[in-house]
Image (tube, rainbow, N blue to C red; front, top):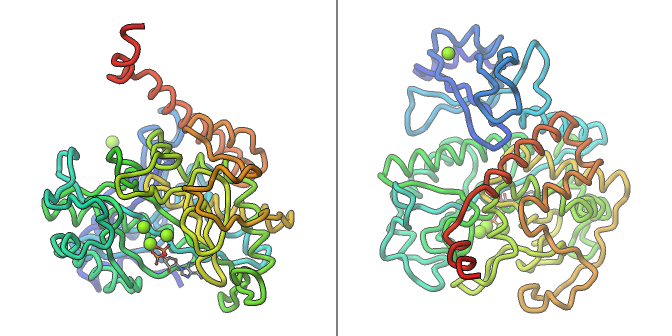
Length: 435
Ligand code: ADP
Ligand code: MG
Ligand code: MG
Ligand code: MG
Ligand code: MG
């Protein structure tokens, strides 16, 4: 039974619905619709000019309609007059093929047709900074190793506890909050869920963190590497695959090394095989490549990978198997599009399951110190252009995410790279003036 948003508004005292969709660059776009008008919008959607957002559409295209998925609705805990609802994009009664939530739903259906149900948890790290974006908001937060800093996390208690209280209220089962490895950086963890639910929560979490930070006169950023020399914002994804009832974890097998089943290993094999290409989605900005492949940070480690390797409970590799029945992909960063993150994991994983891919040997070494000893594993792309070229070469992944999506994504991201290349930097002047 579909939830009637109009009734929901009457019950909860909601005055406005925020009908929200996510474009290809991960931007969340919304219209505020009064509750009086939601009944019609629930059927037909809210109209948008697609060209005005990142979709690779033209000004001549017909209206794009964002049709709310009522099951995703959330009354904003910090502004109870308003409810957020994730929407699916439709044009002339057809799904917009390149819309990230549409792409993800297609891949979830494909996984289901193979009897697989993907459940994931994400760890979106963020910094609390000054409103102008120039510096860390807490001037006392200067330790060389600030991870788990008790004093520093308490100086931000009002912000962190407010967000965590909201997650408790929403039933997300949050279980821990900490100061992370960079000055000004935090992480909040809640329980894993089905891929679509995790993507919706991940989107909403970013919106919530930014909103609550602004309420407290601060600013939150998920930028992959906002400050030179400090650890960047990762967005690790923990992945497991279940039967369609969600009862039996198909990745769990205590008899296997690290407790990862044969099926889990083939899924992982797909991730390993497509890693360089999927970086175009998991690490989608120019800045992303200053987090991975980075030199050692002030704290002593970047905590980000540089090579396509996997291992057991060891945080120096691209994939870590922290315990039985799941693995952690440590590649994605804070700029990742929440829907495309889940979609590309499923696409690569399914490819692995279907081809019975072998993830190759696990390397149980400290990759930061001994990485040079690994000669049989590819290095991750060094910049966005290399990643886009890898994606361009990966016909299987392009097909899995959809031809329309892949074409639009490559075009828009190549445009972003070209825009970056047209910049003249102070560094160029410094190093090239006297040639
Ligand atoms: P770490 O920092 O050690 O990588 P966290 O506790 O910060 O781990 O985050 C772990 C994430 O993995 C959480 O979102 C958690 O719910 C999720 N998770 C735990 N078990 C599973 C599982 N079986 N499948 C998918 N995600 C899981
Ligand atoms: Mg108008
Ligand atoms: Mg964590
Ligand atoms: Mg972390
Ligand atoms: Mg992690």
